[in-house]
Amino acid sequence: MRYNKDFKTSVVYLVNGIGKKDSVWWGFKVNGKSPDQGCSNIKVKNGDSSDWSYLGN
Image (cartoon, rainbow, N blue to C red; front, side, top):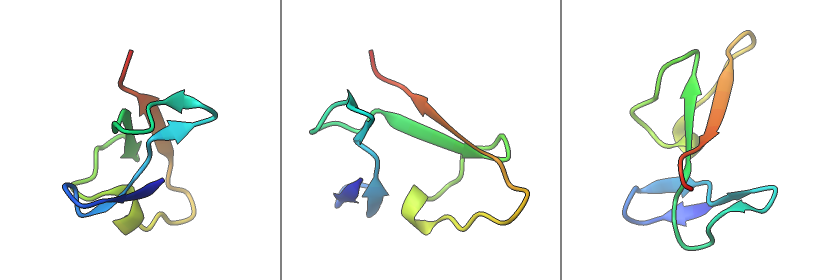
């Protein structure tokens, strides 16, 4: 994870070596919905679920 000036938030590039060091390929949902903010701005609460998906190929 590192800050991305284009998205104005920290973004995930690699998880367990999957992804690309120079491209954002990971997306996430909280409670089944895609937030309108980046992951560094989201505060999850007890009982929330989060799901991360690799969007690249």
